[in-house]
Length: 211
Ligand code: GAR
Picture: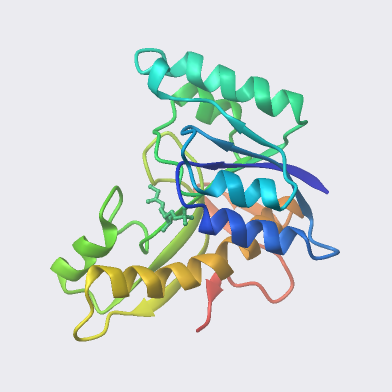
């Protein structure tokens, strides 16, 4: 069973979904730490209520020293025996050095069907582009922001009359199902890399979540 740190910056609803999944017997990962770069992240209280160890490493004082910030996070990881890192609404860009140290051991969830709509404000940009399918992606983290081998995706329709909030809510529901599945595949050793492509070998897994 793999010891996972979940990194958050805010609400933590994906973190909560991972905590729920990891509480089910047989899940191949244990959430050993929830770490926030903001002391006011609402998700911290959710983790504490679930009895999960939490840590705060404020990024603000490290503004000019991102390596120092990441080394401070890794000191917490070491304290908690962390083997895998799951970014869940973590809003800091990580350095190449940190990404290299956690190569193939760090995943992210992004609220779009990558490689479309990297970066911020994905739902507003999807609406502005007029796409008819939108969704979310779990991927291994590489130095480029929102780049890296895709483990899993889920798609939702964009419906007439959608606003940003309605579309975000539809995607978020899928995020909460997709992330626990994808993290389980990685933790169970069911992800193989063929160059830049991740192949999931879990029985029945396709990497696509059917709605
Ligand atoms: C989620 O929609 C997640 O995909 C997104 O932020 C939200 C966090 O919500 N992540 C990013 O935009 C990463 N750049 P949560 O805190 O309730 O999980």
